[in-house]
Length: 104
Image 1 (tube, rainbow, N blue to C red):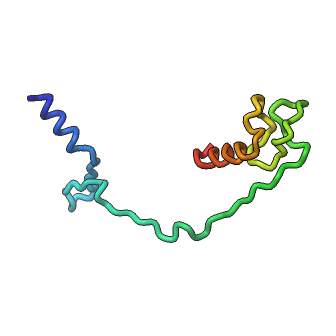
Image 2 (cartoon, helix red, strand yellow):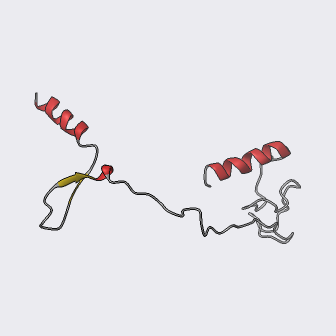
C-alpha cells in the first residue's frame, strides 16, 4: 500500500510547484501552467557565412598534406579524413549536413 501511494505521488508530482515569495500570496501554482511567449524571436539575428580557408590553413597534423576533397571550403575542415570516408562528394555533403543537424 505504501509503495502504491508513493508511486501515485511520484506520478502526480511531475510538474514542479512554485510557491510565491510574497506574503500576500500563499497559493501554490504549477510552474508548467505559466505561459511564456517569445516576441520578436527572429528579429536582430546575425547571419554568418563560412568563407573558404586559405591553402595554408592549420591542419590536424602539421606538415601533413590534406586529401584533395578537403579543400578548406567546409567549416571545421582541418584535413582529417584518414579512412577516406568523404571521398565521395555526395557523402561529403551528407556528412556536412549531419554535423549541422546534430550541432557538432
